[in-house]
Amino acid sequence: LKFAFRVMPYLCREGVNIFYEDSGGDGEVLFLSHGFGSGSRLWDSQMELSTKYRIIRWDMRGHANSDSPEQDLFYSKQHQAAVFVGHSMGAYDNLLFAFAGSEYAAYVKALVLFATGPGFQKDEARAAWNKQAEKMANAFETKGLEALVGSDKSKGHRNWRGLAKSARLVNAQRPNDPYFQRQPEGAAVAVSRLGTLRMPALIIVGARDKAFSRAAEMMNAKIQGSRLVLIPDAGHMANEKSPQLFNRELSTFVDGLRSKL
Image 1 (cartoon, rainbow, N blue to C red):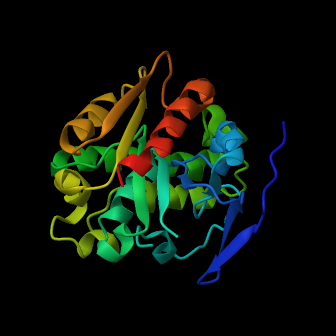
Image 2 (tube, rainbow, N blue to C red):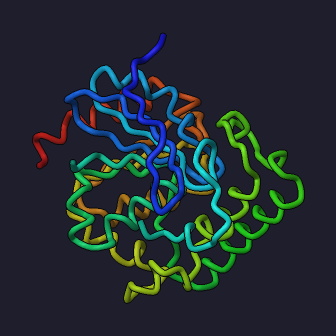
């Protein structure tokens, strides 16, 4: 089954080519962001929804078909209203976008937070996360693209250097990132402000995704009016493991937005 896309392959931002696909159409806009080490092809199983919604998916800097710039500054977290659907790092970055200011939040009609967390309140926990991010960066520098695991190997990655920089500069939650330096809460901005979100939120996590199950429950408890969905017998890539269930929950949430907005 093939899906027709109005393809505008690259958006050039400050000399960096960002790959994206736009299905076009007049339906609700779903903006899909992948997690670290993945790519826009993560959402292949959700493309059947393009008959109903306008779907925009993209590759982050350093990933798949987007450029891998040499300068570190291009990997900062700084960045028509849409439903922001994100996986893992992509969902976390969507939270940061929503908290960047009212002019940014106005673009976010709703959030789908899939297999993710809001960062860390305690410096020790953040330091442990960043240690793992550095370990991943070192693995790409040592093994190249062979360091990719699971379905991330099939996402079209071309440049291990971009993945190493993304691990170190984007997946890591560095207090000296320009975005965090502008926030009173620093790198704890997202976890500190969850209770202030006033937009519809759907939280999805695989029942076997031990790394993010507790974070999902915590976000559901703190975000007013949110809903938590557990995908049975699925791990971190629950949308690939159980695409029909994932798509049904996503579609139900998006279709219900009219009554909430």
